[in-house]
Image 1 (tube, rainbow, N blue to C red):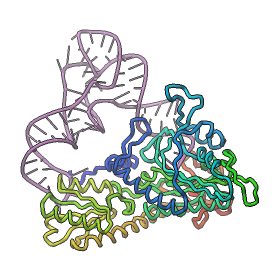
Image 2 (cartoon, chains in turn red, yellow):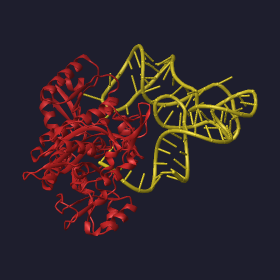
Image 3 (spheres, rainbow, N blue to C red):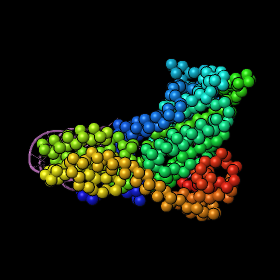
Image 4 (tube, chains in turn blue, cyan):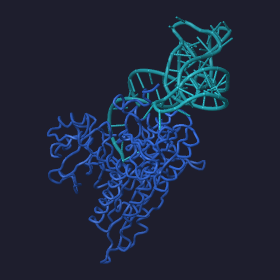
Length: 469
RNA sequence: CGGGCUGUAGCGCAGCUUGGUAGCGCGCUGCGUUCGGGACGCAGAGGUCCCGGGUUCAAAUCCCGGCAGCCCGACCA
């Protein structure tokens, strides 16, 4: 059995590999209703760590958490024309409740701009109430025809921020702040995923937004995944929901609003950004278990050494877990690899006799013999090294698969294996239509230096073109 | 919604052509030997063969009608 692979190799069938990992790492199962998802404890613990990291950053940016209802009157959605048009194909609508047909159908929220807009209008009186910075953690429903666990499910978990500002500049600056200091910082520092930042072309904009910013990550198969988005909504929703305030001159003025979100899709992105043929590879900062201590065999002295190591690692703030010597060694090693635990510490009689343990890195497979007394300091510094190297490695991979091109035809070719960078002037609406026939899209527009432009009419913008999830 | 495929044990499948009382691998349970890269032996448990109807002495198998799922074509975090 040795050497036989447990997972479908990525090179053979990437989607199958993804499904295998999700199942075998015990991340999630399909729910009974098509498109729904059961998130299993291991997958959920990763999501919880994401929530905690993102939530901390959101609060640092000044927003407060609140909760708005799952059920939204259908009439609310209709108040913003582009919004309802964009979302109507994927709405789940409640027509019956309490044993009767409802007078007005109720929509299960696909996003909460409308309800929150209604309440912002109520709560905002004067410029002193601005900016109003809200966030909520919730589930939302967008009916999916082609669901995939974490990446596209009919119900998913997310965080949605909603803010109101006195002027366009303040709204735009705040959306940018969230985008850089919450999303991009989280993606780079915690998930070790490098991104291309930019704005969506008008065709890809959020329904009802005046501008949409995105963080695009590259997966191991070269396809793009939108990992978070931030929208400037202009006065579209303020107008629809009468979000007025009295300015310093005593006149009524319309607010400018923003919204921004990140979801359980991040879990899928994490899997696909770092995973290899042996399974998940988790960056230490996100890993629920950073180090697993494996007893090579279930013997008294081995178990005692393991217990002592767990205690030591705990004092060093390393999230660790013990694998007692039940079952075959190889099997247990494989199982922990599939789950992507960054560091494996093997404790066996042979090493122990010399006062050593074996420490193995999940990302490189590198194996070190380390004296018992040095385990905590070694692991702590190793985890930081791995976090950094995983980011650098992912960035090198992304860069190696990103090509500057000068024609649409070259872009199509380059997007076979990664991203193409092409002058936005050379794309335009016609180019987008051409790309669509090749199942390609403009993922984002950015300035030549990689920064985020204010709008798509700026001179000299670069379009990042790729296949996407 | 259009085209192709599949529903048999927890999972993956064979059996169906040519009807005859339900099988394999993995997993699971118990005991024992093992354990430094997916261990092995022995003994077990587990099935409305997707649903409904029909043909037949007899249907997983043949016929009719449903339902569900998967893959490929237009949207989305």
